[in-house]
Image (cartoon, rainbow, N blue to C red; front, side, top):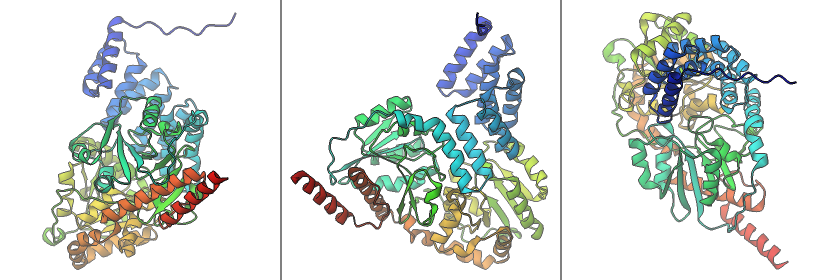
Length: 554
């Protein structure tokens, strides 16, 4: 007779009730209340792995790394092969700069789990450590083949009744980031300038609302709050709206609905802005990019088909962004460097490069702004890493995450911004330029690594882009040695940006709508022939109409 799996041991009724309350608080996004209930459950049953696991997760989300690690270590002592505990621990170690330990833990987790979150984190950790675009493609394709592609293979056929090539297109954006988030700075001018004669605009929002959400909503005729819908239900809901072109703005980030795309929610599906590496899934038809970010030949590193715009993004600066006309070093008597990028981008090697700059300029200070919410948490996250990199601790200052208004005043205390590598800045680069800060950046091959370099090159500041680390260090020193250059840049920085394609909102949005129309034509023809903003749209439409007329006559 086959052995039956042992039943899970019963737990105290009081612990069970506390777990149920904790789960309800988590679903209502009340983490502090959930923590109290998990602690109460553990007071009755100290060996509850689930409670230790969820406590660790809540601490990590709050960026309380050490408390999260302690809870997860207890979970792993009780259940050494817990895939979730291994995944959360990998996330914590990676964020604390212990990259190889993060990679080791995520491989252990992936060997024990087919969960999407595990394989996405595996891809992210590998691609953040390894710059090779071919290996980046491989690890994201691992996620796609294991998680997303089976949904695509089983997808119910999508029937499109109205195949008119010139009709108004029903356009849908799917995102969790129409809030105080970098995506909002790119998308606000797009929403404002969409032509209602060309597109019937829908937003499918997965995130919580804030004041930015309120500001965006008047520009969207159809706003759908879909955070409570499952992936399957959302797919059916979008199909019911008869969306023609569905745009993912999240990629593999918080609030994504990539499995909805995998199920084929719309005839044309494209990803844009939210994630710079390939998604790795067959169900995403296109990636909107440009020739700066993805030169010819880069197609081999994406599962998605590249559709190139003249300029892939628009930028709308924050309303509160006072400009200081002179660099602070003239008043302080010493130069101040600043890193504004997410702390997960601060690799041990990057810190060592910055150490070289500080060693060469012994009066320079460095401010490192990180994503932790409090000064204590920021210090706990960075102090050990700074010391391990051999940086002069008396001249390196860690600043916790600031509200946007204070963030946009960093140009009042800093003289030069330092970009990160391998993962470079995106919106933070544009914000820094708007503050009047010159930026030191490394060139790279992958789009996610070269975002700052391509931005600088695109606005005529390509000589700021360093080919290697030696040139990076030299460029930082040159900036600090030339206050007249810093003054001149602050005087022209905003006009420089205003004169670029990034802030030509009407043209960028019209170009985007043309891209969607060409994608629609590709769908109607059953090909992907039109993949460039420069295509003659009217000629393509006429050719399609002539071919359909010929087929009808036959």
